Length: 106
Image (tube, rainbow, N blue to C red; front, side, top):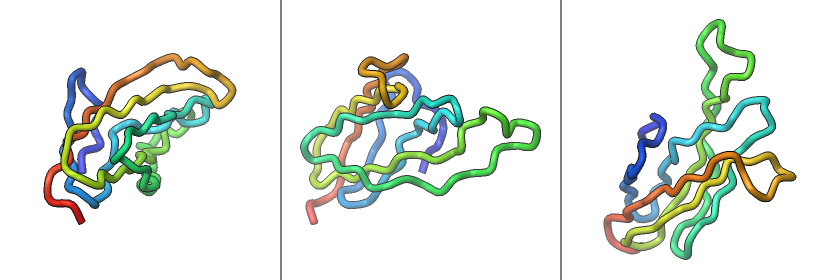
């Protein structure tokens, strides 16, 4: 499972039915979090466990919790991720995460 930040045009491979982490850590105590628009065939699957920040970096550091998604059939899916505070409609950053589902349907 990769936890590095997304590069432009990054593609994530996901086995059908197996949760995969999206490398978009939360924004710590800033109030911002990622909101996802999931296409048909992609479902939220919880999140990873929190990772302790490096010593000296605790204040304002993301918790290391990554969102998990699952694809239910082979194919290519574009997930829209918007970084925003809960009361904001438009965010400060929008990314498209391309996921390629591989394997057979369960």
